[in-house]
Image (cartoon, rainbow, N blue to C red; front, side, top):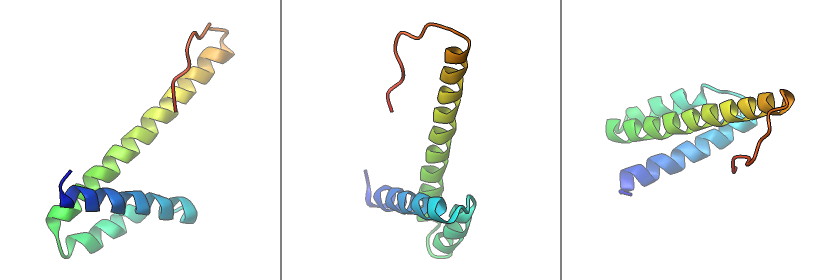
Length: 83
């Protein structure tokens, strides 16, 4: 991973911690604006890291929802997904 990606990933990780503590789900946009004022390269890497994390969250929620529906419907589940 190059320096830009490493910095962007760490910023995204820290941003999600702040978002969780504050409940502000759009806080990442404010951070992106601050980053973009100095470096559009870092801004894009940061937003990519944010989008990947958001997509992973949605996918995990979908998996849990589907698993719960299967359990409630009496479908036999042979192996549960790993967290």
